[in-house]
Every structure is written in C-alpha cells, then in structure tokens.
Image (cartoon, rainbow, N blue to C red):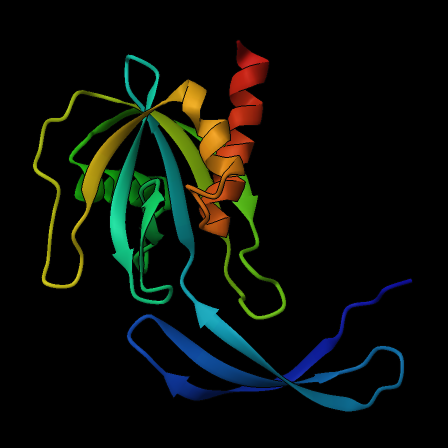
Length: 182
C-alpha cells in the first residue's frame, strides 16, 4: 500500500515574482529516513472556456516566453491572494478577451504537475456576453481574440494547434461535458 510521506521541514531557496522554488525534507513512511526534494510553491491557477451565444469558443493568441512561441489558448491565469477561483476566472476572461462572463460552471480541479507544483488548477466554462470592454494589454502581455467554432476544437487539440497541456486538459474536460449535455 502506498503511504504518504511526512514533511519535516521546508525552506525557500529562491523567491520570484510568480513562484517560489523550495526544498523540503520529508520522512519516508517505509524506512523513516529523511530525503530532500525540491518543489515549486505557486498560487492557484484558473482556466475558463468562454462560450458565445453562437457556441463559439473565445480564445486568445499570445506570445509565451517559455516556449518562445505564439500559442492559441483559453483565458486563464493566477488567482490573486484572497481571491476566489470563480472571481479570478471571470476577471481573467475580461482582462484577456474583453468578454464578460454572465454564467459560470465548474469543470473541477486539476493538479498541474504533482511532482513539482503544490498548487491546483480550477477549471470552468461559462457563457459570455458580447464583447463589451477592451481587453487589457500591458508592456509584457498582449492578447488577440479569436473565435473558434465548437466543431473545430477537437481537430485543434489533436493536431497540436492547441498544445498548452493545461489548456488541453481543460478543453477535453469541457468537450466531455458538452457532448453529454447535448
């Protein structure tokens, strides 16, 4: 039987604006020996699948510095300290797309990468009103809105047009729910 390890201590190795790199000493439940592990301490994240009245998915294109590529994604981001995930999803959608969420539904939570991250990804889908406000752009983030027909979503997931793993996981969850509700 797999058992949980006991955390003896953890320490911050490097603090950054977005996440913290930490090291923990955990005790094996099998040998009682101590072992060191690294982990990334991060705020909670959200992803939202916004749906228009015409059953199109509101997506964004943006440049990603990690992959050094422009990606096609759904709105998402970090949950601010003290903010509820639902409010963060609505905020991120409005900031990145200019669309306002009028009805929100949970798709559940995911663990982004349990080997390294200690946070959760809260996934949602929601119906949006017509474009009402200008999307927020900054010196470091610019998004371009693209409406994707529901019928094209599976193809984009399978041919890697959409290849952000957490976005893909959210969209597959959404498609499963959507097909069951038809």
